[in-house]
Length: 549
Ligand code: G6Q
Image (cartoon, rainbow, N blue to C red; front, side, top):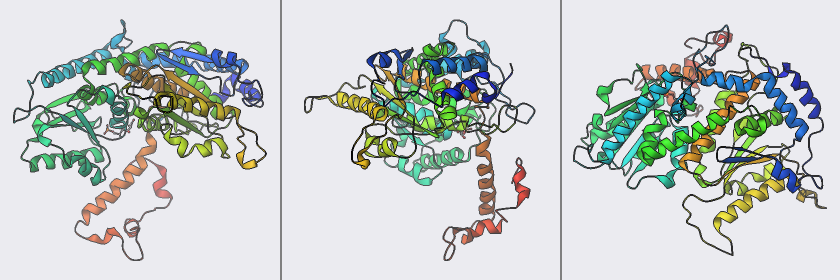
């Protein structure tokens, strides 16, 4: 398989020309009912309505050609089949397969990578047995009581996705179960969670693929100390999710140990045991399986080559159109669902850590834009905050709205003749129309320029099944975009330098333990002195990369 830079594909020049005159959303008759109905794409239980994007059939056809020329669907298939796509040709790199989809291939008759899927099935069976023991009272605390709470200790990929999904599906939480999260190394994070918890009824799920992450290991020790202080034996409460043979792979220290594998990237690990233990405890095993089933359905739908029938691919292409041809810098993802309160934080990591890259898969600097800044908050809250800039600011911000026709709890009331769910959806549609159509006024301050692109991703209700679909829609969209940009979406070198510098400072703090000179003080409130003691910042010698600083 040969990987080609985006701007070397013949369709790139065609799209550049079309971008000189993109579809105008704010001219009379631009948003006909026919256009709005026709511009919709279905995958799984979701519909993507994209009639309010600045594109027409000619652009869509050229985007289809771009997809065909870059072979992104073929690359996606070879990813699922176990190709070593996490690598940079000719340079030292992670050099790994990318097989998070194998976790979900349990639901297809012929999995692409039987070994990876069998390993996933083995872990899933272990989880099912463990959860059954909790449910049937076989596994209790030392006082014979049930476990009611679980604290998830992990950071980054070992926190964001699982936390976002746990919050999104709180409506499906089992009675008598609660989950909590500690991720930040800020001691107040752990302290705030531990306060008021009955630790005797609490499980602690320590999640770290590498088993070496500073924040997680530190928080694990803080929580272990809290258990010991209450006379509780941590080994009877602590669970581990880690890579085989990692420093955390020591079953004697844990009640149960579960594994994930080096071919699953942290930010793509929600459907592995990284999300499984927490979500299984909270939602029950069957609901976790429903999540996997939803993801599997989209993994399959993403193999479709027709961009008009493949939501992840179409979302990826619309993103490329907005980023590379219309020149937009950021992407707002605005779910009209309170349950998705942390989903955008997860997508920020998944997208920006994957596609915030400046060299291609051959190690050469790319000469076009790659991943946009991704941000957002649930509506309608955002409307009362930053929507001013989206409507009238000097930057055009493409928006992906997410909505559900029905609420999760169905617990609603007619107030002023409409339900809350109707008010929520009315606001979503109103925003889409306001962004596209704009408003004229004699008062310049009341002009809305309009012509601002957005789309709506819509399903009936947010359930474990549709949550799995939504997760996979975005994971696959992000992978497709990485293939278009010819970058490695599966490593994260950009987080290493800061980590190494922090470790260097910590070595110093440790060496001068007891001496408070690093705390700063009069004339140096920030505490820069410690950097000067270490000879930092340094000259060019430290800028050559790699190795300890
Ligand atoms: C995700 C990243 C990163 C990782 C965390 C936690 O793709 O690799 O966010 O998940 O650094 O790593 P551990 O799971 O190894 O503790």
